Figure (tube, rainbow, N blue to C red):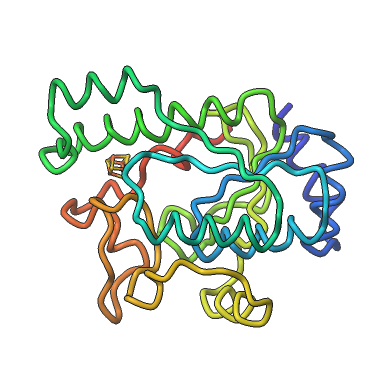
Length: 236
Ligand code: SF4
C-alpha cells in the first residue's frame, strides 16, 4: 500500500519544482504536511521556501534543552524575518528529571546505549508527538550528508513513524545550499562560520576539520552510530 502511494507521488511530482511540490502536497493532504527544522543550513532553505509560499505547512522544531545559544539566535531571527510561527516540542519533563537523577547530566559520553537513551527521550519521543496525525513529513536530508543517506528517495515511507517523508533537497550539494542561503539572505547559524556543518545539541557537536566527513562532528567520540533515531527508521 505505502509503496503504491510513494510511486504515485514520485510520478505525479516528477516534473514539479520544489514550490510546486509543496503546493501539491498542501492541497493533497490539507493540514497534514509538517516540516521539522533544527535551523541547520538545509532546514533554513526549506523554511525560506515554505514561508514565502504562504502554504498551509506547519513548521516545528525539537527543543532538546541542550541546544547552542547560536541555534536559539537563528531561531529568533527566523521568526522575525518570516513572521511564520514555529511550533516547539520539548521532552517530557519527568523523563528528563529521571534520567538526570539516575545518570547525571552528561551520561551520553559514557556509552552508546546512554547516548541513544538521551536522544530517545529528548528527540525521538517529542518527534513522535509532533508527527502524530500528519501525513507528510518534510525533511532537509541530503544524500551526501552520510553514507546511509545515499539510497534515500525523494519520497519514502517511514515505517517507524508511519508517515510519508519528502526530502526535497536530496540531490542538492552543500555548495548549492550555501548559494541559496546567500542569494536569498536567509538567516544562518553563526556556528557555520566556525567550522560547524551539521549542528545538533551543544555537548554532542563539534566543528569539523577540512576534509572530514560532514557528520564527523556529531557524537564525535563515537566511531559509528552517527544517527539519533530521527531518520533511522526502517523503510517498507
Ligand atoms: Fe542528548 Fe546529545 Fe542526543 Fe542531544 S544529541 S539528545 S544531548 S545525546
